[in-house]
Amino acid sequence: MGKGYFISIEGSDGSGKSTQIKLMKEYFASKGFEVVESREPGGTRIGEKVRNIILDNENVEMSPVTEALLYAASRAQHVTEVIRPCLKQGKVIICDRYIDSSIAYQGVGRGLGIDVVSKINSVAIQGIMPDLTVFFDIDPEVALNRKIEDGKADRLELEKLEFHKKVYKGYKQIASTNSRIKIIDASRSVMEIHKDVVNIIDEFLLKRSNGQSK
Ligand SMILES: Nc1ncnc2c1ncn2[C@@H]1O[C@H](COP(=O)(O)OP(=O)(O)OP(=O)(O)O)[C@@H](O)[C@H]1O
Ligand SMILES: [Mg+2]
Image (cartoon, rainbow, N blue to C red; front, side):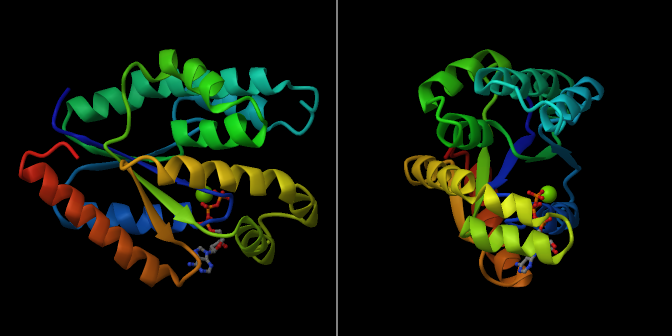
């Protein structure tokens, strides 16, 4: 593996991932890094096709296992085509969602179980885990309301609140037991959150430059 860094961004729908990724990219660029932004599901031509199948409202009969396998399929292509090459080239790759999303959404939210989803993903990720994961911690109802206010979600999404609450519990569970995952209080203002993100990045870069792996 090269000298690049793989950073994944996690959090409920509307938790502010896209907003913060934009600022993160600028921060890394200002420090002289070549930075690539990507997302899952998607991030590759094939992955975007898989994304459309997953998110198609007509696919109501999709089973949770099928859903988990499709996310993993998109991920496998993404690792091969984008993440691994970026790391080899020494770039910073910031990915909007990665394996923790599958654990939280399919494993806990859909109830497949963390073990099953981890197994499904172990082939897909080809040994590549993020060097750092930032989890934007916010009550899923507050996050969904932000999206509704912005016109990017409708009231129907709020009806699925029980599901989103389960997902949030899943995130909290994996974040509290894994030092790779840094938790940020995402209920505050954009710039307050960004300040914390910058501190986490600085700490991460300092540790890496001192040769520590964690
Ligand atoms: N700290 C914040 N305070 C208030 N509103 C915010 C904050 N951060 C983002 N928003 C707004 O909340 C909405 C959702 O933010 P954003 O799109 O960044 O979240 P996301 O996690 O990427 O959502 P999605 O799951 O849809 O990709 C947007 O309208 C955004 O402008
Ligand atoms: Mg987003």
